[in-house]
Figure (cartoon, rainbow, N blue to C red):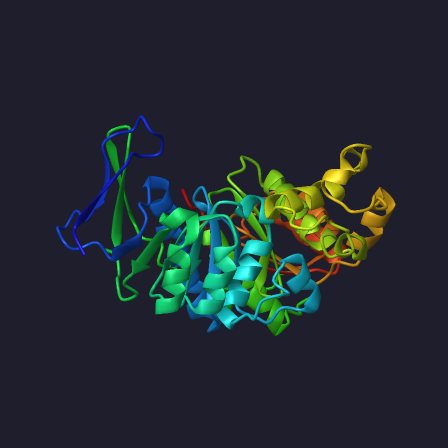
Length: 392
């Protein structure tokens, strides 16, 4: 290890020189095992590593994250996958370890956004996880270690240039952090807030029931939000984020964006989607993009004469708007976290349309009564955590 690492450039090619280094003169906590990670790669790496470490500590399960532009496209813990999820994540031909299950879930939440992602794993990368990563388009990975065979598999990606970073899991940063903006140095204490079930005790709705699975999912949503560019909202179901809305200027736009992603995740499980007759050897990104179009109002473009033949062996029946609406009505048991309070009940109404039953948010709006009333109308359970999770 060294105390600095020179980078090719910063956020953009014109931003030179660029490096990462330890201001205290100590050694960097990472070792680059392969490739040449860049400035944004390391921002993704260090944010995603913190996220998966906290998920593992909170749940006791192997955890993974799929990051793009310093926000998670997906985050999950290593619960087993149903046959349907194996199919929509395109891993039904693989033997999966708990860690591989975690990454399959993290990657599968929003496959379009995860294209070219940075991966974080809470555990040393094993062979099943490496084999899964090997066939996806990804920029790099950070993990506390790598099994020898797994490392060789990953080194074969991107013509031998895949970015592989190993981090010292015992590393602990200083309690005060700094950031330079426009020549001015900002200083703040690190956000060391522990997120656990204690934050969910103040249930303010008529419905007080928070099942254990909902508590787990709410904790996953809050930890995910802690490392998502604000404003942010996160929908979670069965141990994985299914929709993350990041960096929006209004809360309701976060809720809509993340809700639309959650809807797409669920629509991908529709029997018509599972039965789509794709041509043999279709490229994975082409297949994913085609599915996203098929389940949208733009499906007619996919089915147009002279177009569908590029993707399907036979012309599929469309998934009508009515069929989509009926299918989405069956989505239920979703948990929702918000990094700051909901100012209006319209956020709750939008969340309800995507099957949300459980909510965790700081509270503190002058319209809390309206938000609580809207939750009561839908028999939702909502906890006020009393903590804000802005991340910039």
